[in-house]
Image (cartoon, rainbow, N blue to C red; front, top):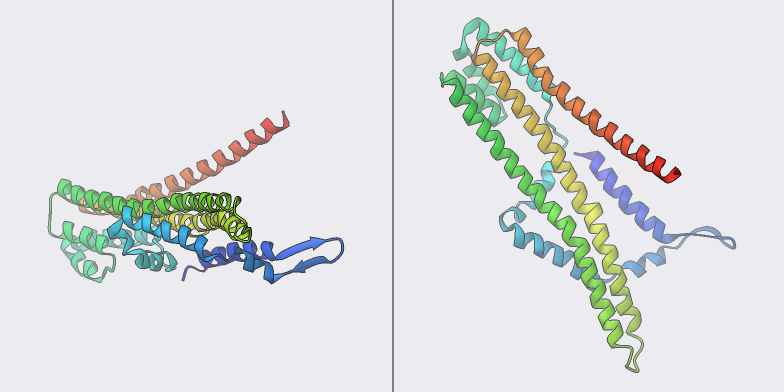
Length: 283
């Protein structure tokens, strides 16, 4: 179970509604009034934002929308792709192939739970041409990445659609409120104004607490899986070429070092950007 994700979502919801209920005043001090939360419950706003957003997602991605429960299970699962584990396994395969030949890897292939890794091993066991092996595995990686990006795009679409429907609900509430200004019945002004404001709240909450974290988690899983598959590709090609296992480890570790370098550059770039902004403010 991906406990970190669940804790983050629960904390976001808790602090949002705790902030709604909590008040500080000179007379009473710090108080928590749970009755205030009832003011943020509105069925009309919920139907507009949640219903409209889901409808847009389904309309844009009709086939992928049916797999939303599966995506949640993947995201909540704590199992991740460990590149170090694949490096160790490839080292073991390289040593076996060096001692006993490529045919000795068939038994190891049957023990593999990763279908891509198993396919890669069987391709060299069957004595396929190296260019053919590389072409097949590269195509598999590209197709997997394309599928992942399409799923991520679906949740990013939902993240964009939710605030838009929040704005639609705001316009609906304002229009209804203005229509009632000329009538004698002023009791509907409050509910209409509530719809106008609460839909924006629901839209922002749905986008930043539900859709954005899912897209970010799936993006991280995609990067991990693609990195591991690239390591498998290079490792399998090196094993087929009969490369020394010691040199193979150094070669595969360059993928991890490159990944760490990219992450460090991104973090340093973010720090530099913040530093420039702070200097600009001081000026």
